[in-house]
Image 1 (cartoon, rainbow, N blue to C red):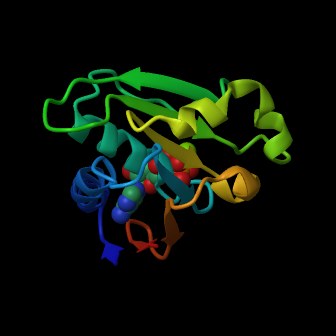
Image 2: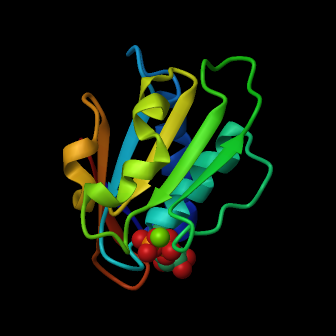
Length: 145
Ligand code: ADP
Ligand code: MG
């Protein structure tokens, strides 16, 4: 689909959050985010987090690789949001120290990974892939698979 403003992308994020947080699979819900710098990956993560009830404002974790946010939502099986940004990584070997296996195995986790194409090999199946293309100043094409 196409959005014509950050606000439209935020509205779409709310719908994505509702679906992602009730993934009927045994492990974590994982969303892989692809797209160039400035595409809107972090904007999407911020909006998903806000919609789920994360109180903190999420900044891009470019220097810390991964950040965990807790939230409470009676209706959802999920209560931890993990935000990863793999922009500075060469490949998945750089993620070895994070203990991702355990995070991916836990149904209470929603894991959002920016620049996921750099660590494709470690993404558990199934996962959702969101690819954002910059097609105009405020226009973005957003493909969800
Ligand atoms: P990324 O994390 O992919 O590098 P960001 O989310 O940090 O991208 O930045 C996207 C920028 O593009 C923000 O400044 C946002 O306000 C702007 N923007 C303009 N139009 C849109 C849109 N339709 N959807 C999302 N972001 C948009
Ligand atoms: Mg970003």
